[in-house]
Length: 314
Ligand code: PSU
Ligand code: MN
Image (cartoon, rainbow, N blue to C red; front, top):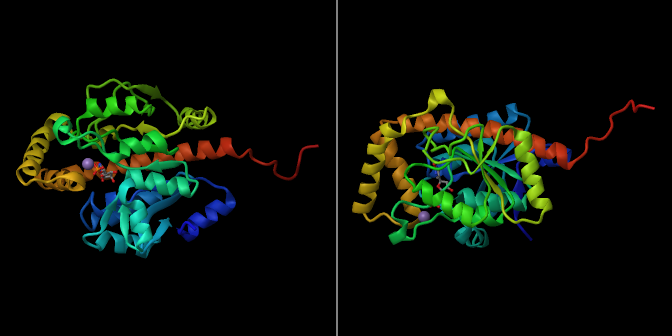
């Protein structure tokens, strides 16, 4: 038996057949400081509701896979320290031993598939780290996108990563990388990366159609939707470059490795930019939640033909 536990509002949405958008929890526990992490998580959930879908923040709590967290649970998750960061490799072990953990993009996709949720919003995905030719540090998020049928909306990938290599690996794995409404792959805090969009789409309806066609064709895996940060919130890549270099040098000096790398770099960049990186991060996550909700509505409309409402035409 799979120990899935639904929040009240997600259970209701499922009963009603209305769209649900998955949200991850590692961004709360390892991606942002308290209390902004909890405030952001709540604001993102509100954005999903305001755009016609129901939010399902995923986590594992004492061996239960939570599909949706209530307000108290979000608050507690945001406050606890040293909570595990779960990816594909440690997800089953955490559930089996009755432990607690926050879900990364990879683990959230796994939980979403189990719960029948097809669309997921986050900030940025994990990818190929700089120097991966020596460290072999490539996020399990990429392999997950290759095999789990969930459409993930992110603001591209962070410039802490090697973006050209990240796109190469996604292409090798056959993951569609669809950039929303521009011709350039976005770089998280900035709208431009200098890299061309592998695919461009301009509407949530087109993205939903591609998601459904992929399943119909029997192609495994999901889609990565790269949604540029709103122009008024972006930070120029050149402005962030020194902080990124500095953070990566610190990580190397301190021998930070494996799953500690991404949280360490995010925290260092937050400190080095005096919190500016966080303001942009919050804006882009909300922006992604809006697009994901629109896509989820379009997918739902195509999956279940709307029954005729009374009075029926004669
Ligand atoms: N990138 C961000 N913010 C984040 C993460 C990545 O801009 O919070 C988190 C996500 O949960 C992502 C994970 O799935 O880090 C990737 O970690 P790793 O590189 O160890 O796979
Ligand atoms: Mn890694």
